[in-house]
Length: 224
Image (tube, rainbow, N blue to C red):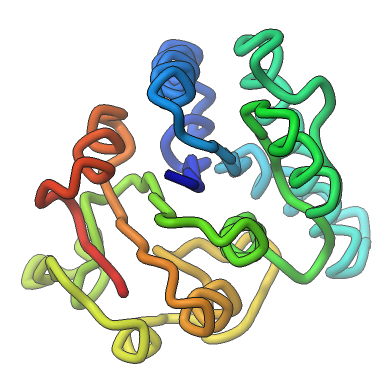
């Protein structure tokens, strides 16, 4: 299978969690050994948002604040790649073309952000479309998509299956902003909806959920 794994910064980088990063690295190796083509997109989490705040206090505009976050996400991606060793891309791709070139060489591709105006969700959606992925698995700090933010509303209800057209009604924010944090950002949904890539949102603190999703077992929320 062709699989994109969106490793949430809220999971491995908020705060940075070397033990969990190590578990994801082991997971990626297992998936490669099983014959899957793998792209992992890593977010920058709270550290990226801290740099966005610092950039803002320095008077930098929105694109420059985005760049600060992009570099943080790429740094986390570099940690993944270095820990993976020779089975991974030697450098972190800064374009979709570079990512596809590594895939053709049968490397595990690890990426962060690409350019201002898009989140790592959007990067994951774009590479999913480009490589005609069978599935995009997003690992989150929640165990799926809820009717509303469960951290704010005790009566929030988890949704097991969802259609893309229904997802937009659950958004708190409907356009990009540096540091946006929600299950999937609006731009990513537009791309995924067009390509009809199956998405599964799982609790990322248990990396084995990725394996369950690939096996088609009921875990998290399925969007298609």
